[in-house]
Image (cartoon, rainbow, N blue to C red; front, side, top):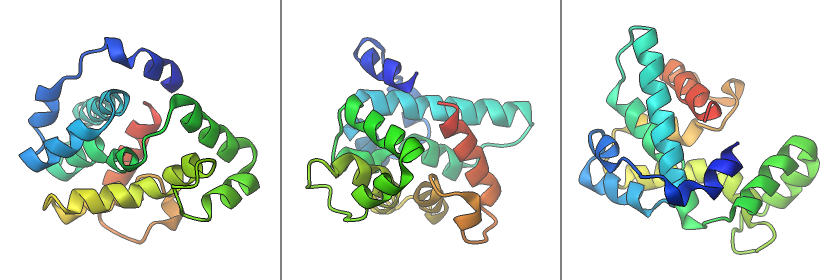
Length: 172
């Protein structure tokens, strides 16, 4: 379904005002450099976080909102076509050994390896880019670990927020 949304992203308006209500000017510049499909995905992740918070009567910490909007900004360093993203997701699911081999180099300049390298490394790139905007360190931490399994995440008071971010990301 994410693939179908990507195909029709050009026809959907991006609610920049919603993003701007949570992001600084420098962070909005990062948001705007993401492809439209990634912007729409990030806004949907934010909406899901807002809905979770409302349903549970929990506040939305600013670092969680920022992380929801910019968790995938690192992908903008090496944009991928929909088929490349799909290839990485399917390979990870059905051929994890092959996925590990293809992502191991860490070199996104190798065309065939690019989707796998971007999939694995974009959280760290996103956190680095976010930190350059003087975002709260907690937002960069959430972004950096948004794709990790919880058992692989260092102990932190931020783990409950990370779980909220991961659930919202997985739902979108």
